[in-house]
Image 1 (cartoon, protein in one colour):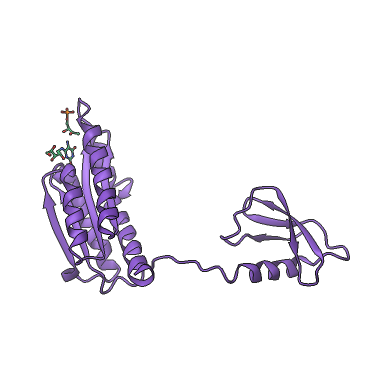
Image 2: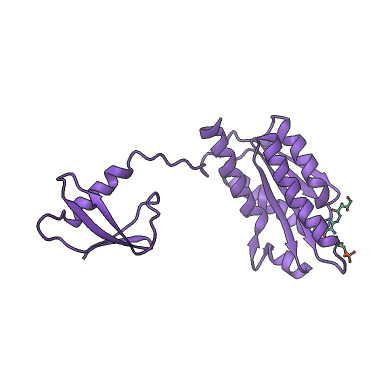
Amino acid sequence: MKSLASPPSLRLTPTTRHHLPSRQSSIVSCVIKSNSLSFSSSASGFASPLAVEKELRLQTAAVRHVTGSLIRGEGLRFAIVVARFNEVVTKLLLEGAIETFKKYSVREEDIEVIWVPGSFEIGVVAQNLGKSGKFNAVLCIGAVIRGDTTHYDAVANSAASGVLSAGINSGVPCIFGVLTCEDMDQALNRSGGKAGNKGAETALTALEMASLFEHHLK
Ligand SMILES: Nc1c(NC[C@H](O)[C@H](O)[C@H](O)CO)[nH]c(=O)[nH]c1=O
Ligand SMILES: CC(=O)[C@@H](O)COP(=O)(O)O
């Protein structure tokens, strides 16, 4: 029995039995388990696993897969909206984001940083920047940390829906880099501590989305 990795376009139900027409007009039976194919027979009248593999490749070769690239940052322009609230955290997230942009060949002069009082204010500014037509993506950075009241939920949810609306209304990718944490420890862990730097991670998302729009969706 031979097993081969399933191409990404073949998302078939686990353990479903499928009949695949072969070029010699015989029928091949195979069982698809998660991401691999197991062929049940090679008796006469059945194509060999190799023939099936070839067949599958032929069937999926025409499907176009489009993703943004992380290796073409040069020439892309980014705005970063940063909340001053919990600045000790947001400054670290910002540093992570800028370092990442530079690592991926984004020029310093193509990065603009705009400070706002708190995460609640990010959305309206992101939308304005998106609509300006000057940027390929807008990265939004903030840190919402739970206090004693329900204020946390209002700010965190407004920040998320504000950034989402900004992207949809402007047609420019607006990336959500706002931490929503239970306490300062969690926030510091995510801004260069034990859990990495979410600012750096969201910069990668911004690069991928900017490249997707620039090279494929315009
Ligand atoms: N508590 C947090 C805030 N609160 C401030 C709001 O974002 C806003 O500036 C104010 O309500 C005026 O509109 N902001 C954060 O970014 N993080 C918080 O934890
Ligand atoms: C998450 C916050 O907005 C925070 O500053 C508010 O704290 P509290 O809920 O104690 O008023």
